[in-house]
Image 1: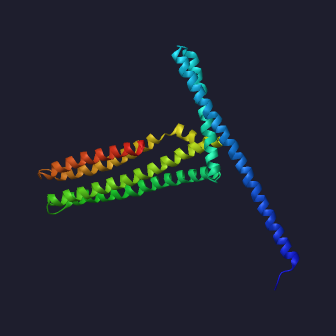
Image 2: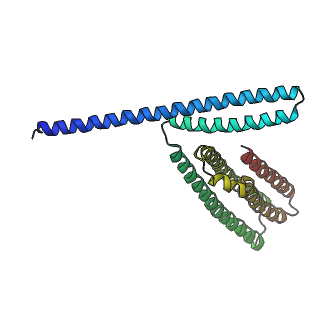
Length: 258
């Protein structure tokens, strides 16, 4: 059934009103973005001027004035960064609050993944190492040295692989925290920065390293003792334990500095 002229006119008017509202919203957003960009540019130029004044004052041995100009430059640069963040978020077409919420959700998600990974991984490794200790200690016949060494290598590789996955999640978590901190500067939020003041990323890295080193050291000592008198596998087990521990420490340092 064909629509009446009044129904068509009503829909057309509704579409027209929506289009006009959209145009007005776009123009308003562009005006805000243009003002924010201008603010960022003015603050950046003021930073450059203050830096020049500081260098001139230093050359004239006016140390106090130079220090004052550095403070001004630092303040203006912070304002420029804040305005630039808002402008870039506006140009991208996304509300920085939405991105900040996603960052916080990602931080929570990565935290949970790390906790679950360590609980499950360490539970599995502890069970396997404990089972190996029982088998090695109660075997009726002596276990060949080659078999023991291969078992040690397999458990060592499992531990290091689990640690590599852990490091990847730590890097992703660190990236999410860094982005949330940048967005909070523009939004005048404090939650992520306040949390990082109380609990720095290095604490999490140290805790992880200690846990993995304990598991790896326990595995190495267990097989080193069980290979007593079996040359050269006992020596290789010692070398593997030291090499694996070094890999864990270096990997943790890389994940923290990345």
